[in-house]
Structures are given as C-alpha cells and as structure tokens.
Length: 441
Ligand code: GDP
Ligand code: IMO
Ligand code: MG
Image (cartoon, rainbow, N blue to C red; front, side):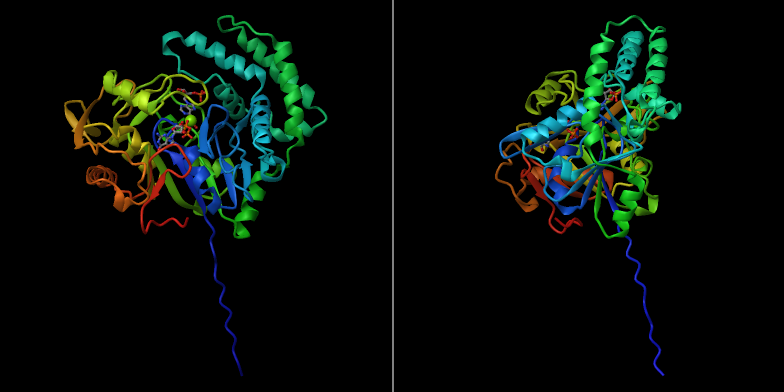
C-alpha cells in the first residue's frame, strides 16, 4: 500500500509599502517609478491632489498628483485605492498629461469605487476655513482635502461608485447645498460656482470612462493569484492625522496602517516597508519644524535642492535631518529598509549636521514630546565631515567617498534600520543600490 502525502505549501504574497518618513516631498515618486518594474500593481492608498510626485527620465519631467507613480512603466496596473480622495478636474488634467506622453492609461489605470470625490465646494470650504484661521492657518494646499475627508468620516461623502447611480445629481446637489450653508459661517470668499460646476461635471465624464473596480476584492484576488503589489504613500508620516504635528497635518493616515484601510488588505499581508527620508529635512506649510534653518544654510538647501512645492510652487522650509522624528516614524511604520534621497544636495558642504536628540523639560530625550507645537524643543546636533565631491559617476555603494559612508553609517547606527538605496540626483537612473540589499531589482 502506498501512502501519498500531499504537502500544501502556503505562499503568502505580500504587499510592499513605500512611504515618506518626514513632512512629505522625500522623493517618493522617483523611487516608486524606479521600483515599479519589480511589481505587478502600484496602488495609492491615501491622500489626493495635495500630493505632487515628481518623476524625471529621458530628459522629461512629470508631476503626478492622484495617479500612482508606476504609470510610466509598461505592463503594470496602477490602482487609485479607496482611501484616496479624487478631484475629477485635476484627474482629467493628469490624464491629458499622460496622453501627451503617449501613455495608454485606459489599459493600466483602475479606480476603486469606494474612493471619495472632492467637490468644487470642498475646495471652497478649504479656502474659507484657512482664511478664517488667519495666522494659525495650516498652510493647506487648498485642494479640498480636509473638507472631503470630513465628509467621509461624517458619512456625507460622495464616492466614485455613486456617479453611476440614477440619483447622483440629487446626491451631489444635497451635499453642495449643505456646503453653501456651511460657507456662511466663514469670512466671505469670492467664487463663480456655475463655472466651477461646469468644469467639474465635464471632467466627471472622463472619470466615468475609466475602468472602476471594487478595489478590496481586486487587490485581494491579485495577491492570492501571486501578484506583487507596491503601495505608494503620499505626504509623510509627520503629516499623519493621528501621529503627525497636529493640527498642522493632513487629513489621512499616511503611515503603514493606512495601507490596510486605504486598499482593503489585512495587516498580515504587509511585507517590506520602505521608508524614505531626505538627507536633510523640509516642510511646506505651517507647523513646528525643530531643525529648521532660518539662515544662509537653509537658503542653500532650498537653492541647491530646488525646494519649491511640486503642487503649489511654495518655497519649502529647510533644515538638518531630524533623527528623533525619524526614529518615531520608523517605529510607527515598521520600516524594514531606508532610502536616503537628495544626498547630492550637500555635496559641497564642509560639514553636515544631524539632530540626534531633543532638549526639553531640562533634559535631552531621544523621543518626541506629546506635542511639538506646544512644547519648545532644542535639537542636539552631531556634526559630520562633508564629502566635498560630486557623486555623478558613482554607481555602487563601494564607490562612495569615505566621509559620505561615515555619514550613512552614523544614520544607520542612530536609526537601526539598513539603508538599502541612496538617491544621488533627480533622474530615474541616479540611484545607488546597496550591494546584497534585501530588494530584488
Ligand atoms: P515626493 O512628493 O515625495 O514624490 O517628492 P517631490 O517630487 O515633491 O519632491 C522631490 C523633488 O526632489 C523633486 O523635484 C525630485 O525631482 C527631486 N529629487 C528626487 N530625488 C532627488 C535626488 O536624489 N537628488 C536631487 N537633487 N533631487 C531629487
Ligand atoms: P507629497 O505626497 C508636502 C502639507 C501642506 C499643509 C498640510 C495640510 O507630495 O509628499 P492639505 O492640503 O493636505 O490639507 O495640507 O500638509 N502637505 C504636503 N506637504 N508634501 C505633500 O505631499 C503634502 N500634502 C500636504 O503643505 O502643510
Ligand atoms: Mg511632493
């Protein structure tokens, strides 16, 4: 008699996550564009047109706001997940940009039906609310993000799937009228609702033509079929609605936990968490920024790093890298590997600094206080020798100048996560991979 043993090997396919660990603009778009070829699906899980993700290749520059940064890689599906908020007007403009770049987006772009819609009046409410805050304003991108997520959690929102319903217009009008009433509590702002609505409804037709899916089923079926998924974060962990520098934050969960709610996947499906930090630090908009440099050095970082917002064009505030904040966001996200971007910006500095601890309440601490806004902290810096050379020809870690290697090792020692990639310029190919890194590229 023969006994046949059948072994069932359970293969758990994972969703890798890539997100920003600071206050946004860490270079997520560039890295996602680079890594996308390694995945079957790239999915955005939160945020909306407040994001501006820049990609540079073949002598061209593209800025994506709602569309995932895998869209220029052939054969990859790009999913706008349920956690994203979509402005049809901005989406239409982005799609036109893709058309001009010969990207056949109808084949590679999917929209989750549970993603919420940004109405023209959400944008107006954002503007009026900011105007009412005066000096305390958040510095919102004014894309209607806060009011749209408020309607989502307030259970009033409109979703992409609703645009196919018979009574969509009625639902739209009910919400719009509510917004118009709400606007009366704010200082008056000027607007031409008719023209805003015309533009919005025309753009809605473009959205209607895109393939929509029940994102949660789509993504789980794909995972079960062995597809590889990369979840692309927007904003940064220090802008997270729960853990960021509240109230100077955005209105979504920008951390790894947001991937689960923003795509409909279980926490057990999360694989690698790739956290991105600049070699220094920037912030755009209001709010605390302990390592901000309001001096010549800050101006140099802005000038050399071209630190101007990809969405609003605003100058970004610049400062040294903040390791207490990074330790915090690495903890919140479960980061398994680090990417350091914009290292080239400091090529000519004789000295680079890193804040290793904060001084507050009479002591130095490795951790953040309850609230960076109400507790004044003084960063404690560690100085590192600059490398004083160009990195243009560098293609391997082993070719980095010794002073730069020392700086990277110091960051790893403080952060206790391996640095697997270092970005040395804005172009797609300006990326140096760590030999033997746990990433298959
Ligand atoms: P994202 O929002 O995280 O995708 O980042 P942004 O696109 O808003 O901002 C990053 C900016 O830095 C863009 O202008 C990129 O082209 C640029 N960039 C990305 N990586 C590097 C780098 O390693 N060096 C330099 N000099 N620029 C970079
Ligand atoms: P990416 O994805 C940098 C900031 C705004 C403001 C605050 C709230 O390109 O990294 P919001 O419009 O969300 O109500 O603004 O958050 N902010 C960003 N800063 N990068 C972003 O996105 C940002 N998205 C929002 O400047 O301070
Ligand atoms: Mg950006």
